[in-house]
Image (cartoon, rainbow over all chains, first blue to last red; front, side, top):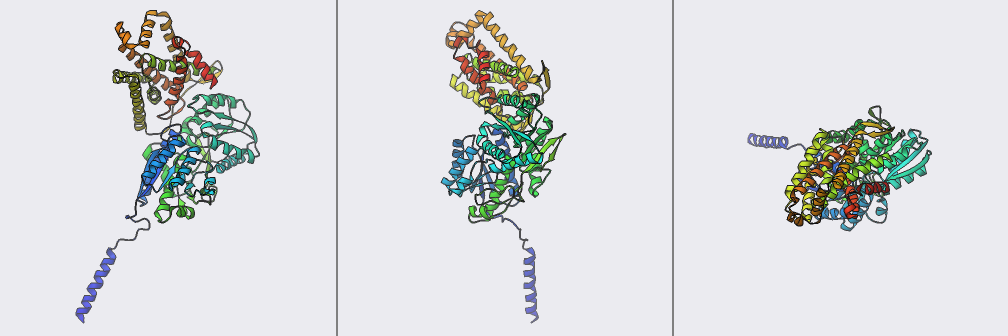
Length: 378
Length: 229
């Protein structure tokens, strides 16, 4: 009897020790999780190469952060240039690499081509920058395309919000020809939905055709009596335009779609008051626990301020696909039904696969550079 | 109008460099774009080092491509361009650098001082070259013989290789210096110089149609193109 009791005690002790020795369950992904390969289309060459560099940096940062979260992710970056044809070639090359999904591209024509190629190759594509009418692709049966960036309407909504918040009485539009599809869509919404008076529009030619065209437009616009100038170029040319506009004597408030003119170090060095801009997120207004991490780590690893549109949304697109793919099963259903945390907010997709920008947990930010610092307008 | 004239002066002098490289050195020098960008990055440290670095790259291009035919030399210059671009990416890492600039008043016009200086240097460069063209018939004849046929030039005892080296060194130094000045006040990236090179190439191509009169017609061509586009 005592022997049986002893044996029972020993077995019980062994079971107890084994129980204690079992490592605690980690809440999220298992180390054995299959690798999630994500392709990223980045315009490393061509007209949008300055944006391409920030997208590439952001993509590498997303891979690093996803790994830190325990996901087994591999990001493969391909140059998609600045044309639809080069985008298609790069897209198909990524498909051959066996990626789970592809994110990125920059201009609208590139995103439209990538959406069609996604449908042909049955690989999910998440547009992280372009505002082209991708919803119509989904409506006509292309279920492989999603967008975590703004659509054209949201770009317009933010500009209108700025005009209303500042009670502007008049505005002038400056388009950028290489981004004509995006600018025209945004301008049309602004013209139809604001009470402020429209005083005209001018277009800056592609710098490859005329590197000095911003001077002509800036000098022409400086003569106009207008309160707000809405600039549709997110690239380096917007800085040239602003400088030339002020040199020519223009004093209107400038509302930029963001990009280069939303970078704190550029604004500080330029030191021109009255430059407003939209951003998917700003460091001073954290949306999730990833916002601060994104801005801090970007500065730490790349030695410069993080881009708060093309960069942050490419970063978020990678995290969205990672979270959806890690849930297992059908990626499209996971994206359609899930909620995903990014640095710019909490993403959900509507029936047209468009991220619900303007919802409570996902809103763009408008900032303005005034008296040497960035102030949040909304 | 005044800024158009200053821009035309700069592009005319850059186009002169492109044209000389093509006609004398027998190379469509595609590294000019990156040399221009390099000038911008070097101006962060000092404007005075820009011609030295430019000249050094021009010499490198000459040494590396002197035994090559025109097409191979052009591809070699593209290789140099890519190497400079990548070096800038590695060394500077950051994607956007806004270069300092100073404001200058010229007859009531507000201008960027460095751009004004670039225009004045360009004007001097053009005047000096035209003076060389018009006042030194023997030197001009030597240049013409080299432009037409290098082998013939060597038969006449002209040192075509020396002329090639001089053209590549001076034109590269000039591109680098103008890049340092003209990119002031702008946000630069490693690829920004391509825009200026392509535009200069465009002006040089149009001027080249006028054969012997090409050098003299560079400024009107540049002014016309700048005004049209």
